[in-house]
Image (tube, rainbow over all chains, first blue to last red):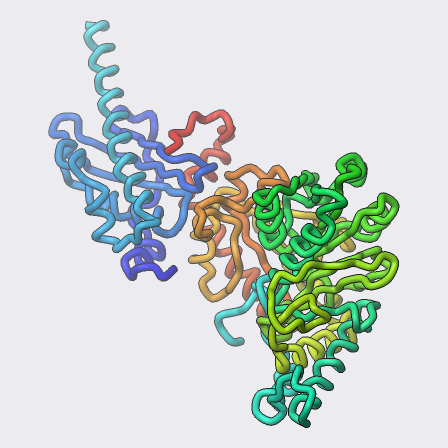
Length: 137
Length: 409
């Protein structure tokens, strides 16, 4: 199968590969997929709790070139966005940007899931933090 | 060095120029139909076919009358299994094969099951070998055929065909072997190996595609087949259809060369393969060989075959990273079915590792320079992709990946 130029570009020069501090309360981590399925994405977002703006995004992906490209593009897409805007990102945006063929659509779905999971994790952490602050106050 | 580098010789091989030279006259000069018995064009074509048949028969210790030409090993497997099943149906309805067989055998058995036969698919151990005792137990008075491949195309496992054949003979059951990966590569003699039927093909041994053969034993026991194609009654009524004369000539030449140069080809493929496997393990950790380890059991694995799981690196991504090297992968992403390799699964390789497997197939024309390049390129790709792999990071942190609750989708 031939890859689109954009997939090849993201594969060769992945944006924002890396790890953020998982214990940081302002970092949300989304880990989706499964090794047995052949793809696992980990997306981490550093979010400003005051403004709700995504200030940094890092990913690591085990998966095919399209999965790597989908997660790399997702980090580009959401950096600087508010949580609300990021939540509305649809996998179809990733499909059209990267020209993913039908058999690779699940890679874009996984990236969308990773964004949602990371935001959920951030919200959970914030809620816990607020709860514990209330208790101590 | 010419790019891309071809390391997929278990899929097919480059035709040897000497084979092409032998074939060429049969396209444009000696183009007669080998079945035309009344003019020189036909006689010459027939003579060429019979000469190739003699060469091929001699190469495997058979009589020329025991060689049936086909379009390839898939057809040979179909003809052997379906032909025997139909012919001996009154004797029994049971066939035994193995879970790691090529689809040409597995799917033929499934087709036979749909038409009322029963099939047993024997399991294999972690290196791909069947257990002779289990085979013995599986044989019943209804069993008419056992089919076990000689060398496995994915994982290189060489079964003990002689022992399996001996057991079948003792039990009075016919024995077929898919010898596609072994004829011309390692010694193959139908009497030494106790084989009654054997499938093989030209394009795996530097011959042309589209021509293969089925060995059908004529004496002790005499094997009979129901033809699977109706027509002019060619090939002693076992396979109708005008013979592929240039292809058969090429097949004969290819096998003649393969047998004459077997020791040389074997040593060449083996040494480069062993070197690749040994050297990969220097800079890289978490590598798993699929099939017998050639460094520990040199005789148990096909000479040019290496199948390695590069844990935490998905196979298709890996192939993208080594785009100058043509290999194949057991990863689901590279298959039409989106299922990882059933052969690896049968070994008990977890699906996570199956997704990371790469098969290297070295051949007669593989060079030292190419292997040096491959070693370097593969190492770089694995290092880069592992830096990008959340699984590698987690494993390095001591997280047991099996204990993680994954969100299956």
